[in-house]
Length: 187
Ligand SMILES: Nc1ncnc2c1ncn2[C@@H]1O[C@H](COP(=O)(O)OP(=O)(O)OP(=O)(O)O)[C@@H](O)[C@H]1O
Ligand SMILES: [Mg+2]
Image 1 (tube, protein in one colour):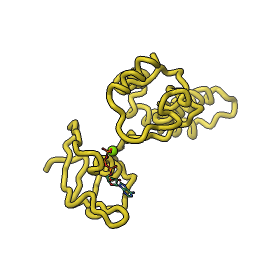
Image 2: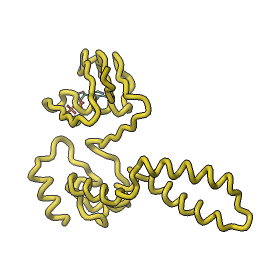
Image 3: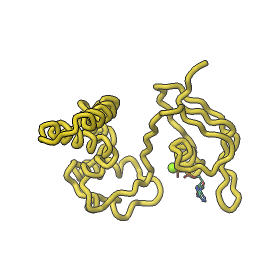
């Protein structure tokens, strides 16, 4: 049997006051598939994605990820710290990897300490190296650049509070032309 990365079985969602926005959704996703979800405004696309990300668990039916799988989720209206730069906002998403990298350097350095506990350090080193190996940390910088380009992000050092839509996020859909203009102005 195929190993699906995610399975939804008869998923439904009722929002207040008793409005059924999703009903009997049964879907299975193959590894490596790139899938777009289309629907009119308010059809329930974001709701499906929140259910798949595990953010919305108050549902009918079952939504089951493959055990051990890691799910990424980019919110339609992300909550960003206005004091951050674009780079810092993006780094929040890979914070675990970056702090593991910093900690691993500290562990390497700690071997040289006169009272170093080699067993303890070796155990921590192994754990951190394992985490970093799966994260493909060597290409992390390149991955961030590719993501920034694909998402048409402003320059890394731009402050979130200065970006249009940063503090007062526009409600409703932003026309693609407006995104382009913002991009061009920020570069
Ligand atoms: N927690 C909630 N309480 C009440 N209504 C909700 C809730 N969550 C979603 N809804 C409503 O359910 C419907 C589906 O919302 P959802 O955000 O999933 O739609 P969407 O397809 O992503 O829309 P858009 O294209 O505007 O992004 C909308 O009418 C929304 O107002
Ligand atoms: Mg949406």
